[in-house]
Length: 120
Image 1 (cartoon, one colour):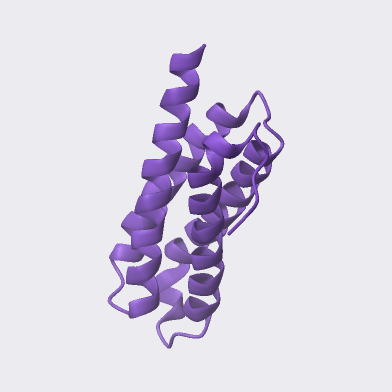
Image 2 (cartoon, helix red, strand yellow):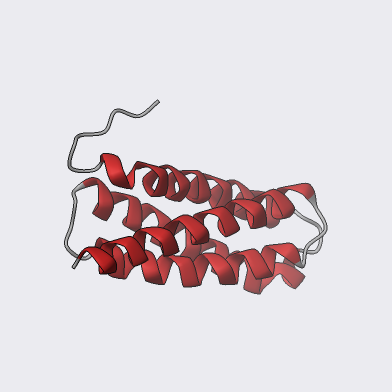
């Protein structure tokens, strides 16, 4: 269980979702590169990379309690939604699991962004 400071404890669910999504995207990306139909997965692979990167950045921004966390998480939710859509098109287990993680992360990021906006 990650140890959160008081400053970031309210963000922990979103940080955890971003970290889990980043890991799922990295694992799915690697698996997709090894699939026999890799050429058919180019769009999925590209979005997986974007999603892993934005999830990692979002986690970092929230961990340092950046004033830009809500904005980044809003963008993260959009990219996670796109990644979930792409992964859901593939029938293999790694893509289906990744799509689920992306949906969960998008939900957490939307909650975080809306709570931060409401607090202002």
